[in-house]
Amino acid sequence: MHIDVLTLFPEMFSQVLSASILGRAIEQGYLSVNTYNIRDYSVDKHHRVDDYAFGGGTGLIMMAQPIFDAINAIDPEHTAKRIYLSPQGRVMNDAKARQLSHENRLLLLCGHYEGIDQRVVDTLIDEEVSIGDYVLTGGELPAMVMIDAVARQIKGVLGNENGADDESFANGLLEYPQYTRPSDYNGLPVPEVLLSGHHKNITAWRRKQSVLKTALNRPDLLDKVQLSGDEERMVKELSALQDTDK
Ligand code: 4GN
Image (cartoon, rainbow, N blue to C red; front, side):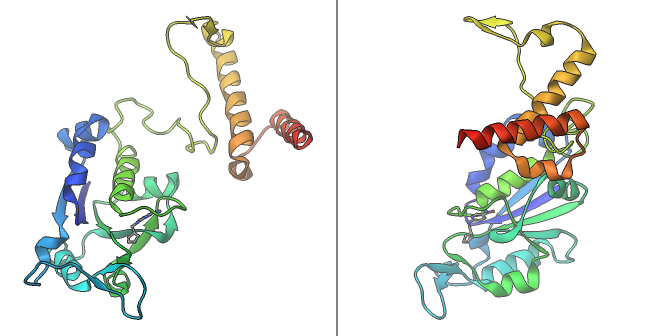
């Protein structure tokens, strides 16, 4: 996959894209990312990229001209799926990251200040996407979040065979607790069953932990998960217990 990023702050991306698994994915050719400074496309003699909002209000709006010229120069044939990261977008989830991981080319537009001229969104952008219900000072961190979430869904990027498939959200449940050596850390033990070597019991324990954790922290996710009769009863008991707590 190739990703073009348009931003006023390209320097924000270098460390994130060179470290750890993203760094390796790029090194190994699963992913390439180019960043472009929108300011380089301003035809204003002072290289201005923002201006006051028509109709008033505080704060500056990113002008249409530099963004139009940048996008038309970088993706002239419109071969990329063009995404604007914004709190007004449809909220991204695991399924969305998987879907985007099958695209050949993405173009990510990062806004700053109070917003961008709506004519950019209306005529150049394919999808407005949000990474969650909160507002940040710029779209750069959301773009990096999206790059990370999408990259780890590309086959081969995570070293292991299963890839992202047995992790949280793939099965609709939250991840079960994990432990590594030592089996006793300063008197804190690892759950006995994990040391037993009894794989059926371990799988059952992990499933139960996943269901309990999901019921506790994200009950909304359970609507889409097929639970066994035993699991249904366990979840009901837990929610009854929580109601008496209040
Ligand atoms: C995206 C962008 C949050 C998100 C952003 C999000 C920059 N904040 N939830 N901030 O995905 C005005 C101009 C706000 C761009 C935008």
